[in-house]
Each structure stands twice: as structure tokens, then as C-alpha cells.
Length: 331
Ligand code: TYM
Image (tube, rainbow, N blue to C red; front, side):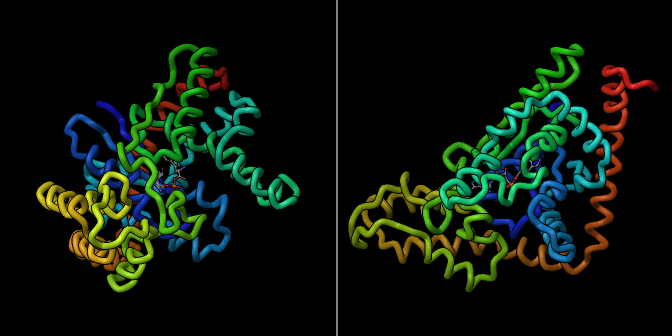
């Protein structure tokens, strides 16, 4: 069986980038018979940013409820909260002893903050806690604890999966074949969904379209998507349009073909956006309701996650023991 693993950190509302870049491909992979999916709430990754208990808790429930509302089947998927699986954090330490500091200096998320500080003439370490700095090691522990083969992610996470691979190789080199080397899988075409302003859609840029936004707000946000200023009758290239890229994710094959034709023969952006809203809202109506229901019954979410954590620990625990034996922990 191939293990497919991915996580989302609770630092904001789930947005279209998360859905299209990670959740949708992961849910598709979960349907493949001989794959074992393991999807989780990366709450301790979220803790690098969110330091308000109530907010943290709500955001974590939000991630779990989103997956479930979109159809994740907890019977098939090992679905858990990262903080429930202590073995991951033990492995995190072990891996950190095999990770050169220089590798962390080059990690995008950390480097991004340093660059920003430099531009603003601030102390370079401003706003960097050690959790942010060593973030990729914990992510490596997430991945390697379960002998993961494939990690479905957005393009922004590719470097992290490569780091996990590097660390695994170093360890294997010292102690012999231990870890499976993971591969990432990114969604072609929408590896990095742009946000309202054209930059990468990201919680930290405040340019997101939350997945379960109320219809009215959703329509407003869609209307804000940046487009070119061609007149309505001018032909549009569907392949370079964000509005069309989004349309494709929610429409049927027949609808997509028809819409591409409309773009090529000329469609106003107002109308194109209205069409986008219609297919999106049609798809989201039911999950949005389920999401609300689930958010109202956190006990049910807890039960599902606890059950998943038990299954996750059953895999991670014996493997960690084997690793400890390999490094010479007296047992
Ligand atoms: P996070 O929570 O920032 O994002 C979750 C997933 O959404 C993808 N994504 C996007 N994809 C396309 N276009 C976008 N604009 C966009 N924005 C976000 C991300 O690539 C990601 O796949 N470090 C991870 C969480 C994590 C993890 C892991 C993932 C922790 N441990 C182990 C995989 C395996 C993160 O911060 O994702």
C-alpha cells in the first residue's frame, strides 16, 4: 500500500488555494483503492503563529470540519490532529540532530520573514520564533513517521517536502535504509492559485477567498478578482484567466468546454464572474451546510480525530521504536 499524507495548519479560514492545491487532489487520491491516505490538522505548526487559545481551537476545528464536509471518509482516511501523536515530536527531535542549520536558513518561510525585515530596516530575527525557524523539521517528522510515499501539496510546500527527503537520506546514509523517500505531487495548472490581488492566495496576504464564505460575500469577493481591462466583446484567453481557472475546478467537462468557447468569442468579466459564482455556489451549498453543522458539534469532530490518532499512533509507535534502536537508545 502507498501512503498519501498531507496536512493543513490552522492559521486562518480554509481558502480556495488550500482547497484546489491540496484538499481536492488529496480527496481524489483517497479514492484510489490501494492507497492509504493519512490527512491531519497540523495544529502544532499553527502554533508558530496563533497564540490565542480560543482562536487556535476554533481554527483547528475549522480545518477538521472542512475536510469532513467535503466528503473525507474517516473509515478509509487516517484522519487526526498532529498534537495527538506524540511520536511525531520525538522523531522531530531525532531528525533535528541530523539537520544542518544552513538548511533551515534557506527555508522559504523563514527566509521570507528575514527579507521583509531587511527591507523594513528591522532586526533580521524580528518575529521569528524557533518554531518558525525549525518548521520544516517538524514537517519532515510528519511525513517520515508514516513512511509516506506521496505528499499532495501546493507549489509553496515543494521545498519542505524536498527538505524532508534530504533529512531522510542523511539518516538512511548513517543507519541504513530506514525512511521511505517521499515525493510531492502538485496539481498541474493550479500549483499556486493567485489571490484577489494576483499574488499567491495566502492567509498572510489577506487576499483569500474563504471556501465556506456566505453566498453574498462570496459573490462580492469573486467580483474583486483582478482581471485585465479588455472590453466585454473582446476575445479572452481562458488559459491565462484566474476566473476561468477557478471555473474549471467547479464545473463539469461540458460546462468547461462551453465556457472556454464563450471566452474566446468574447465575454464580459462581469458575466464570467457571475458564471463562476453560480458553479461554485452550486458545488459549495451542501458542504457549507455540513460544515456549519459540524462546527456546532465539536464532540463529534473530537471523536473522529481521536479515533484517527489512535490509528496513527499504532503506525508511528513501533516505527519510532525501531528508529530509537537504530540510533542506539538503550531499550
Ligand atoms: P498550509 O496550511 O499553509 O496550506 C495547506 C495546503 O494548501 C496549499 N496552498 C495552496 N495551493 C495552491 N495555491 C495556493 N494559493 C495555496 N495556498 C496554500 C499548500 O501548499 C498546502 O498544501 N506546512 C504545511 C502544513 C503541513 C504539511 C505537513 C503538509 C504540515 N506538515 C506534512 C504536508 C505534509 C502548510 O503550512 O500548509
